[in-house]
Amino acid sequence: MMGGSTIRVLVVRLVACLGAALLGFGAGRLAAPAPAGAPPPLGDTEAAWKARDAARTRLEIRLAGAVARRDRGAILAEAEALAALDPFHPRARAELRRIAEGEAALAAATGASDAGASEDAGARSAPEGSSAGPGGAARIGGGSTPEEERAGGTSGEEAAAKGRSGKDAVAAAAARSTSAYEAARRRMRLRTHEAIDARHPHAGIAAALKRHAWDGRLEQAIEDLRKLRGAAPEAAGILDSLRAIAAGLEGGRAVLAEGRLSEADPLFGHAFEAERSILPAEVSSVAVREARRQLAQAWFEEGRRFLGRDQLDDAVAAWRRGLAADPSHLDLRAAIQRAAERAAAR
Image (cartoon, helix red, strand yellow):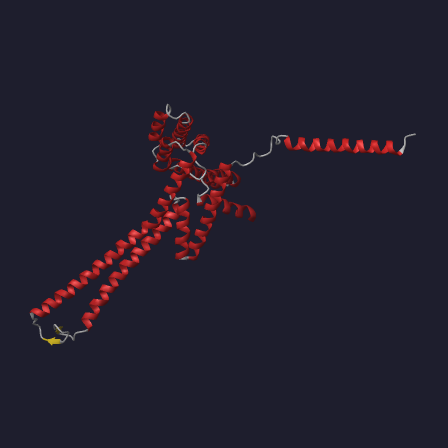
């Protein structure tokens, strides 16, 4: 028969073994790879893109609300903020242009009304059949003195000056019409250049990528990097990515022109992914932004065709693919919202 001390030793050993087993199981769970069906964790680039898209969506919603309220100050503020995030955003540019045109029209109307008011005041200051003398006294009769003629000439000059001031006001309003957009473009250009410089310290590589991203000169960027391959070893990989962008965009547009949207989508997708591999997360090139809008519009039209055949699910699927290409496409967002309301009403 075992003594009490022996039992205590056995209990301690049993507890130690159980603790080691539990620790091993937990470590194995932590080190085990994620299941095959689990979504991969978001990388820094993808997370940055999602944050940028979310910010753009919030600004678009606020801008739409300001337009619905006809709040000019809010429209201007939201449009400027949206243009700062995406200088090529169509809705932001349209609202800024609309505000500028309204200012120009108001300035023109104000100038014309001021000139008309001055003429009416001059006509009312003299009795019928009389003309104003040099000192403002009324003079009966049809004749006029040289002083009066000079005074009349001065009045004409004043009217002309008022007309010129009205035109100057219109010109000033027209100049203001592009100031917000141009300021946003300057800020965006500066941020784009700074981001590329931070990502690619080599001056030649950074300059080539700036040509591609901001100036839209993809072929020139490819040629510049081709010349840099000997001096900068990393230029070879970036050159391959730029070539993949060019091939994807060219192939996607060619196939899309033939009406083969399902084949064009992956070609464009290869170009989009290739660009993400070489540009900072917050930077998108002119060519890729245009391709995203083109692809999104094609999916929007495809969804409308499905909707015309009463294939609502297929229409929504097409619109969602378009929204994945360009999250700023407002027509796609509105179409998906209307489809959800229609499905809920069934």
